[in-house]
Length: 191
Image 1 (cartoon, helix red, strand yellow):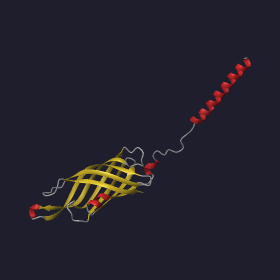
Image 2 (cartoon, helix red, strand yellow):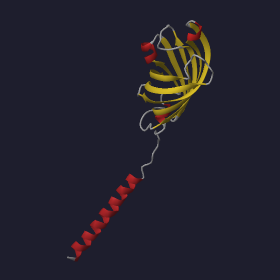
Image 3 (cartoon, rainbow, N blue to C red):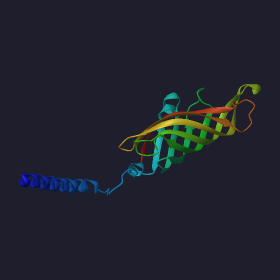
Image 4 (cartoon, helix red, strand yellow):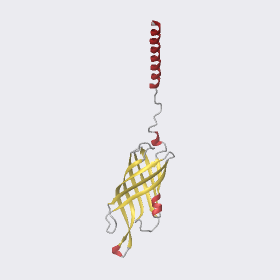
């Protein structure tokens, strides 16, 4: 009986030591590569987009360039050129520098998700002057504003974004509006 009790205690001691060694091997796993920030720069720090909404609404070309600073910030410039004479826009040409702050980008590839954009715009506008027999009057306009939007970036580096905002003009005009909208549905590629 003493032999059985001794063998049982020895066996349990051996098994507990062996189990402890197996647990030590599991807890000694080290992270060799941290890829949590890897996707922020996976497709480069440059992005070019085309505003498809301007092509559909009126014959205009609106292209954007953005430099990705990190997964939460980016800055860039957009160029707008109106090719038609319609009543949907009064801007002929606009150069718009902007800065974006991205937030709520939990699982995508950096500089994506919801964003707030602060922009300024330098534009050439064509307003109808009703005081002088409806003759068109070209004017230079400067504005500043803010926009909100959301950007999606896929695994291939293609992006899609939707945004809307408003800018207020700082130059005085008698016949022009006090501000302008900034809306878009843009498709682009990060490189």
